[in-house]
Length: 444
Image: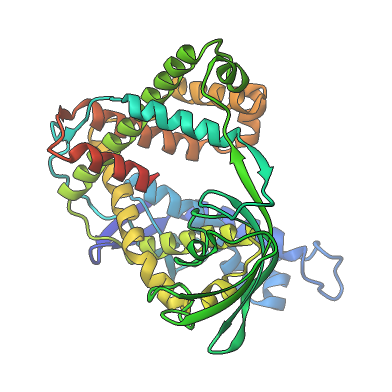
């Protein structure tokens, strides 16, 4: 087999492939055996007609086409491997020549991964703040534990206060007319939680059991439902129940109730350890994001439209799955937000482009540094998955089937590990620690 490559543009190449005559003849024989079993020819049992009879009956072209379908896919794959191409789309195939006793010649036009011009990715400076947990942090965590394990007491003779949980019936109108969705019965609402539109919960503070209140609010100008944005709504609200949290005192008994610690002092130490570990993980994640971002920013690559389009489609599928879990269709989501599918795709475009560039840059760094998943890496990852799912490693391997995706994930992780190991940690700028934490929280 012979194959030549011609670069057509930044992303497209043209392969011209010549398959040797003996291989073509073998495919023609195979094509005849396939077709003769499918065609009913008068005077012959199915599958028993000689080739020249079959050719008279259906013509030579179907046999040549069938032979081409047998020969072309593996020949194309061989040519791609020989020239170390990385196709990102299906090829456009054109048969140039196919004849009995002659080589088969075809052309394949295909988009391939672009070349990446790497910038500086080793020795980059990355802010790494110290792992600090204050007494106030520990106190705040203890407060959250108190809230989590609080008991609820029914309130009958006192007005509702911020932090109380009320059960309400409500019905809202806009411009004097009922509006779908602005009503509910026996709805549980914590005052001060920010669950409802700003101003709603605050106007219920001071209300008593069975009291009816008229509440007027204005929807924010950027409200997700455009037909309500900036409009005034009037709600008739009835208080059906009031419950107040009663917090247990912070003492040794509380520590025993909420943990395996014997004393409050031990619980505080355990909380500090947990918070430090969580903060360390947040910082590690932020550092990994930072080194990748700097490597991507320093690189130059012309993004193929087909890869960006696929990433947008993947994000749409993820959104659909998320909406399906909430029993919402994509069409309902679009209508409620006043958007079209094109609007959504445009919103996804920047993130999709960033994802594709990141993928291409990390692959290029892995190639430049000879980073790949070893058998040891695969075994370790499969063992880890087996422990996680409580399965036998052989069963996990069997369920995974094709391990190429797992190999790819391991390669990317090792590449990011490499970037972190070869970065230079520096103290954060003033206010930098807060920025790093915010970035970690946002990306997570």
